[in-house]
Length: 505
Image 1 (spheres, rainbow, N blue to C red):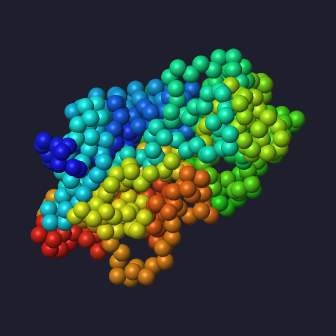
Image 2 (tube, rainbow, N blue to C red; image 1 turned 90 degrees about the horizontal axis):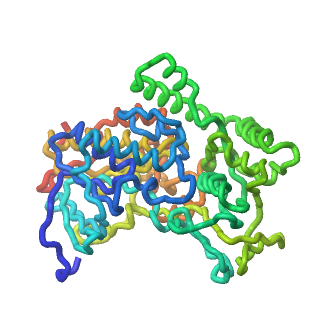
Image 3 (cartoon, rainbow, N blue to C red; image 1 turned 135 degrees about the horizontal axis):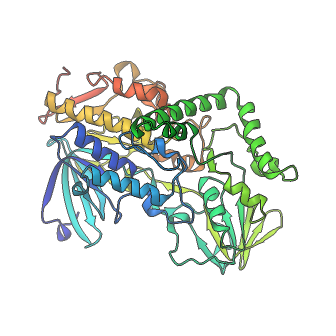
């Protein structure tokens, strides 16, 4: 940071948490509970907590995961499993208030750079207070990256020909205009994932008609926005804490079993998923064209549609689906490769998001920049050669929060272990017998290949052959594996401030 705008003071904390979304709030809670002698601060670039649920303002915004598992293990979720952004924010607000976390959170603090000093075993973090356009600086022993994996407020939008010619309104769910009035207008929603499946039915109440325009189909699951076992246990007046734990375990187990079935019997799963849509839309609807993907289930995320609202709106004629490619935008709509033209007053680009690596922060060691794509990931949360840093990247096929809390527990154990042993820093390293291990890109494209990951794979760390060196996506095993990580394993290189190696105890 230039001297002319240098901060006046530098604050120090044992652990600096980046982000006050679902992961950052979990991190603050667990460190407070498990490491009460560690000082912490949470830096959040937005004006409030919530992450996705604060920045996304499109109609109908709701969770794609059930709140029994997307919620925290220590705070029972009592409402419907698929919740609105407003309900999720209220839940998170209760967690912050009930656990007195507010004093630890600094809003409108955007981190620009983080530099590690080997001599001091310390991170120096340069940030800007965006409310005052004022530089601020922190030092921290440990960085806990809980900022998510995509750029909030900057969604991914392809460069379509003629887009500048369109005279209507274009809105991305991550940049939704507060004053957008689509009453009585023709709306085209480009996309076919969870966001499109949420926006389309939500906009049908006011719009003249809503068309979902997709290049390729997506798999969907439908069901009641309720969980039968939770309802039954409540009728039996079982304590909500017990209900929360029972329902969480049931969902986790069933998700694991369903994922396995998608791999071992993909044709059976495919037939059931598509058959369900056919039952909802009737025999005259071309389900094969619009809702029958050409890949096996779970190679991309399967969106859950509560109470089948998307398909009900299609069956009622309030919404429609077009599967085609965009040729170009025109003044009053979109021309397709097939020659068809879709008239539109409003176009919603539910086309995904831009991944980033570590919040687009400039990372360095002793002033020399380094890149995370040159590292190997340790269990998808630490990186070879990078000291005192952990990163939360949740599950693709389960709730993000499940992994957030597993990683928070691991970080707490690590912080306490370092305090007891006198270690000033820790970084993972390949074991001697792993030095020649074959390395691959972060994600296995044969297993999971959404566009946002493929676009960013060259920016992400490498993965290895064994489970230790990859992000496995297997919560049912990781819930037992993470607590069993041996902190004295040779994979962890500990150092004292003098940089001499600290013997594992």
